[in-house]
Image (cartoon, rainbow, N blue to C red; front, side, top):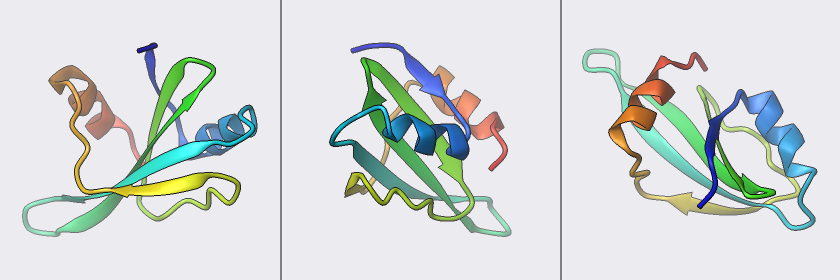
Length: 87
């Protein structure tokens, strides 16, 4: 397993062009206690790096094969950093 890199959605989409047949796993998470909202988290592997991004809406990964995940399990340090990123 290679390094895990947190990127913004634009960088994530650009990185997909580096792979011939990209695969993207997407998970919808619920955040907030009072105002529940959906956050979309996407993961892919490019050239040995694992890239993760999140967005307040779905991102259009036209070229990629997509898998809808039920839950994304991340190490606690990575999960807390992901929460710090603004969508």
